[in-house]
Image (cartoon, rainbow, N blue to C red; front, side, top):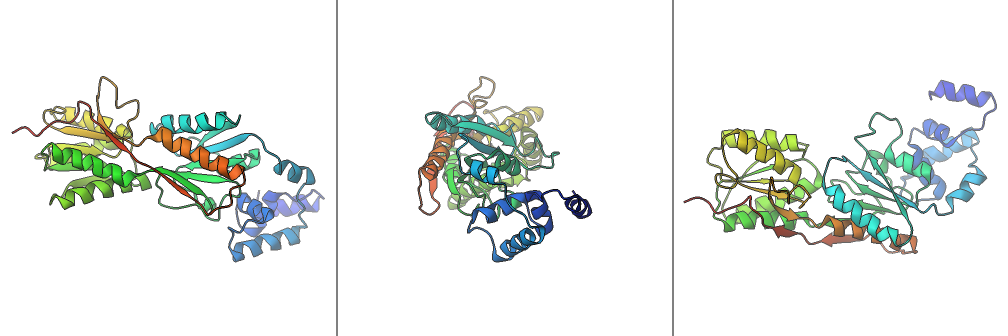
Length: 341
């Protein structure tokens, strides 16, 4: 609604809404909600803008809505970035497993799937009055001042959410496990295909640092995406430019599947010519087609930890934001082998 339309509607005697306040203050509706709740996670400048807009519009929150806001809905929201990313399968199972014991429902919103809709997943969940939110994607700018309800950030991310607990696997440790495995098999010409997110960067850092300690400089290629197509594209590029490569580590199992296709397209075999290693131990990794050696991030446990952190907040925990770090493990299958002599 434009400013002109808002003014016209208010002149007709209609009661101003929280969206009118947000428009007047130049902020999101969720930030207005934070101010109304008295959240400390709002800058003085933005708080003043919201309070000024409230005064100018003579906005009064609905008493019925305020009463409802004080009650529990028995629902939490989970925001993911792409439903095609297989790590969500175990993660969501872990969240649901813990919350089911308390009779709490789980609602899931995919940022990419509904990108054409004006309302963001966060706005949608706040409108539903969920009891808490798990953010299993890179935080959006609107989360920069906090969310206003108990929240957990799942996975290693480039940004944090003020006041949110964190539940994640130790991705840097996982990258080192991948490097140590390939080094133990005698590989010295090693490539890595990766993406731009926080988890991918941590995995790459652990992997590259471990190889550097052994005097090896890996070839690293990647962009923002970590899909199967990204794995195919960057693995093909890597192997064509570096035909001496004997092993490839992919940032996740989806990329590894694309890498396997690229290796086959180039007339090479896994693991006879190229050892291939993935990450996440998704259902894809154990398929008879791939039999993929992978790092298990124990995403089921990450989900459990995220849900447990939310329940602690529901039960009145007042401590500073906590971080739960889950230790990953290596799962060896048939896609890696010793370097051919």
